Amino acid sequence: MEDVQRRLLQQNRVQFVKSLEVAPLWDLLLHKEIFSQDMIEEIQSAGTRRDQARQLMIDLQTRGRRAFPLFVACLEETGQTDLANILKEGCRNQTVDPLPISPVKVHIPTIKNDEKIAGIPLHVPVKGNRVEPQGPQTTGFTGPGEKHVGEPKRDHDKVVVLL
Image 1 (tube, rainbow, N blue to C red):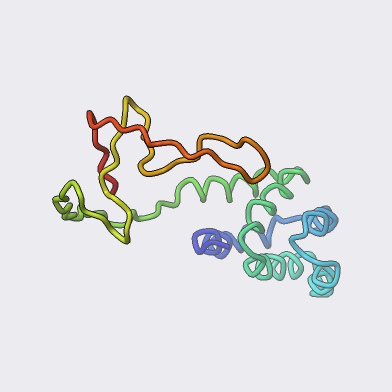
Image 2 (image 1 turned 45 degrees about the vertical axis):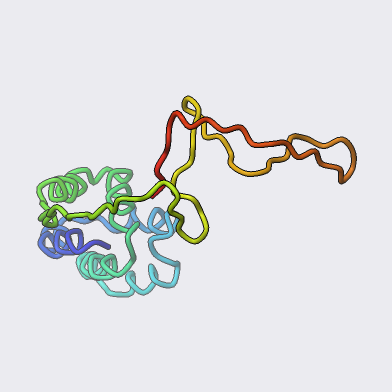
């Protein structure tokens, strides 16, 4: 669960303990796999409805990233829309400070026409928008295992620099 969501649950705990109807939530919490059957039984053993609501709000904070939106959906499905709206509205009002972004200066070296990196040429002649292969190329098969090798086509009108 995100810290923002956890804080939102903590800030509204009193309202939820006071108003949350836990009985209609149990099957949905189990079905949506927010809690296991054992966990639900442990929360139910907390005592009164208010104690169960309090324990549910505490345990919910430990249930992972999916728990918060699924819990909001459970609230809506059980008609507890006022409580669902408190959480949805709280999420809309939370702002996250953006990370500072600064430009980075990049040095692009000048490259000679015949320069290679790891044996790969950095300049590849192209014709139109298509890269023409360099060196011998396979033009087709005449039979099993037989290849015809043709001469490469070259056009030095354009050069693409690979970086």
